[in-house]
Amino acid sequence: MSPSTPSPVRPGEPLAVTGLGLVTPAGIGVADSWAGVLSGVSAAATDPVLDGVPIDISCRVPGFDALELLGRKHARRLDRFVQLAVVAAREAVSDAGLDPSTWDGARVGVVVGCGMGGAATWEAQMRRLVEQGPDRVSAMLIPMLVPNMVAGQIAMEFGAHGPNLVTATACASGATAIGVARDLLRSGACDVVLTGGTEAGITPLSIAGFSQMGALSTRVDDPATASRPFDVDRDGFVAAEAAGILVLEHRADADARRARTHALVAGYGASADAFHATAPDPDGTGAELAMRAALDDAGVAPDEVDHVNAHGTSTPLNDAAEARTLRRVLGDAFSVTSTKGSPVTRWAPPARSRRPSRS
Image (cartoon, rainbow, N blue to C red; front, side, top):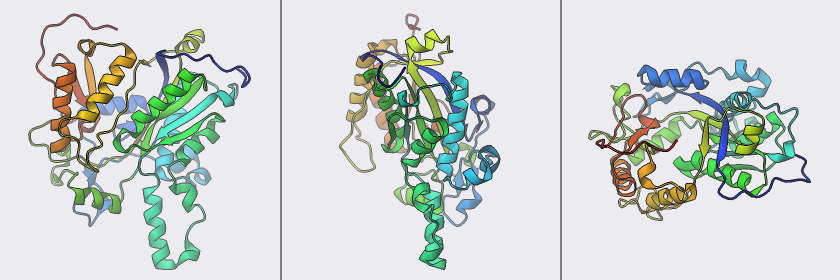
């Protein structure tokens, strides 16, 4: 489509996920990531970068060589959170069967979630400032640091001239990005949106901060069992890095070009606890508002839900509040997993007989 003939507004339309790209501690690429999850081997391990920090374990992407994957000149100008996202975006666009050289870039948007931005660049350049003086600070500090550059770099990579946004809603940043992408498509502003999330904030300063908050697991002597969402012995999460990018487009457009549709984005809800800077509302009020809004948007009844991928932080306060809210909204006839616990632990409420789920 040309910029002068925008897509019609399509409120309530499910959107098709036609492309997937992953760079995770379980592996580089969708296939390797999934195989890593199924292996049952935890990615958590002692991290040399965190030497001297009380909590020195993390989940790193194994064997990620940005110089090889992106080229030396390009990679050196990008912070790791952008490097991960660009590699994931390349896989997603390829998986979708789209050719950026032939699409109308004005109709292609980018919305990526990122909470921290270039934390590693910030710390490295701060040390340089202190040790060598301001004249030794890199001219690339700001372009590598600010979170919005991940969307900018993806846009430059693929010639995407449409809306270009980064959402920063802490742990919900990636989910918020998908919701915003959905709105851009439904409004008729875009035909295709590259969306998802990325984070690479495993640095001594950020981990020290999380540690001081009491948010991290202290199982440094047994990293493989450290992150255990909904477990009675949970004591915090393990910091990780990853990027996940989706290609989202109108279902009719995907069908017209005979694209494979991995999933549909049927509903979205957003809310705020408005309760505390770091602790969740113990009653789960905000989470319940978002869940009910998403169900309503999708036209799905609570008893039609088979599976929930939970926030599941493995912290005492969040998991308790989230479990109570899930039961209150959805009942108990569904399974629950948490990416943060994969592949260490899974939790599900007792099963009961029920009618077959809607596909």
